[in-house]
Image (cartoon, rainbow, N blue to C red):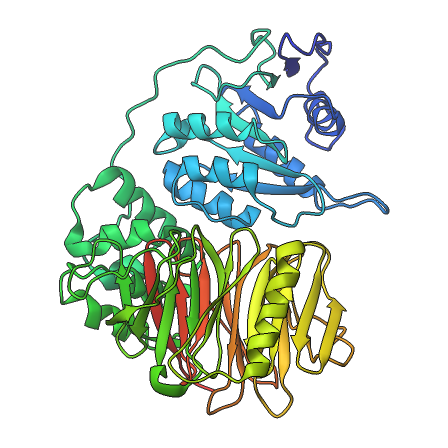
Amino acid sequence: MPSATPSPADGRRPSPRPPAPLTGTGPEAAALLGWLTDPEAPRLCLVTGAPGSGKSALLGWLAAHGARSRRGRARTERVLVPLAGQSALGVAWTLADRLGVVARTPADLVRALATSEARRTGRTVLLLTDLHAAAEPEALAELFGGLAEVGRIRLVVEARTGARVPRAARTTVVDLDGDGPAGPPAPAPFPVLPALPGLPDLSDPVAVCAADPLLVTTGYATASPDDHGGLRDAWLRAGQALCAADGPAGRALVLLTALGDGADPRLRPALAAQAAPAPWRLRWARHRGDVSPPWPGPVAVLGATAGGPSAELLLVGDHNGTVRLLRESDASGAGRLAHRVEGRITALAPTADGTVLLLDERGRLHSVRGTAPRPPYLERLTEAVSTTLSRHPGTALAAIAGSVVVGDRLGSVHAFGVNGLHQAASHSGRVTAVTAVESETPFVCSGGADGTVRLWTPGRAPVPEPLAEHRAPVVALHAAPTPGGPLVAAAWADGRVELIAPEGGRRRAFRPGPEVRAVAVTATGALVVGTEESLVCLEPQGN
């Protein structure tokens, strides 16, 4: 006989009723819907019962029921995730992808959901089936217990009677056996699972990219501690992107970009051949731990020089405020920027005369002179902007000939120019990134916490439709003129990067795996993506 059992903190227990088919009118369905619609109910609901008692069917019914929406009410998204055979890493990456965040580990997922600004229009309910049959049930129980403390989601976890289950401060139990305890079921030992069926050769890059990525993740996480020539480390570095990639070619490209310099040299040509249909070709990649060639360090901000004696250089800033110069062709070092900014740099903007403008973490402007003489009017302009930002801190920075562009926390973009000030209220919420590019019609591109990327020519009205829009905040932008026309690179907090031709053309996307901190477009039209542990350069392929 099914029953719904809130934890003692709820102070109430529905009376048992006779079982009914899963039509949405039975007591178990009513109990779940009552829990779901009660704002004071615990965030964790356990569905327990013996094999064949209808636990999975009940969660499947709830997932289908969630497809309905009511006018005028925020939709509650319901995400069904089967756990059978899955590792904690694979489940964490699946949930992170569905919830619009980036997570390297299960613990990262809990932190990311607690702190992210991801745009969500309603609550999310995770429907997690067959915990007892997972490859790492104990680690998953710990993960779900942590997620139950995050306010923006609720969890329904299915497990057989007697299985160990997640623990939370408050829990509701729906017991399909009808004789469950008044609280969560008592812990029980986890069963020893047999070897994973259908596991590919984890040292074969072609087999790994062709297989189910969640199965490969389980293999690397639980069944095989060997490094497999460097494939395992690369997979664990970029796992969330690999699990979300489109087909073997997409997975081969991501895996290729994630290989360290110590990987088996036979892996690169094999992965490059498999990645040939992908819309990108890898030019180079540098990762934490690489020594030949060396990793340049964690990336917080990126820029590309605008010409002059330092043309074809990348400016790479880290969290400590150091800005390194790298050659675009191979990421080899070319010195450092001589500056005295204390603390973290949040944006940098090279100018055509060699001067580099920097925005610090307090939103204030700094100027690093280049070797070429600077026109006095630009000096006066920079000083005026610096004075303004000392009173009204900026959140984003860019530069274009004769103008300095600044974003603010209220969603406005300000273009300070020699001919005056132009402003546009472009975003709902904080402006997170701006960039500017010289073309036949110079334009400013801005990104915001609202997830939109918008175009604007100072002195004109902003373009009403966003150039791009995604469910997560924009974290980085960069635009540059290229032989094929201007290109805009945009990155979002969920790890997605897009290379966009504002004047029309193919739009390409890429996800490196870790959180993206900065992007840049080179003069040749290549895309550079920076994270805290990698720097990758990709060339677009095809039309």
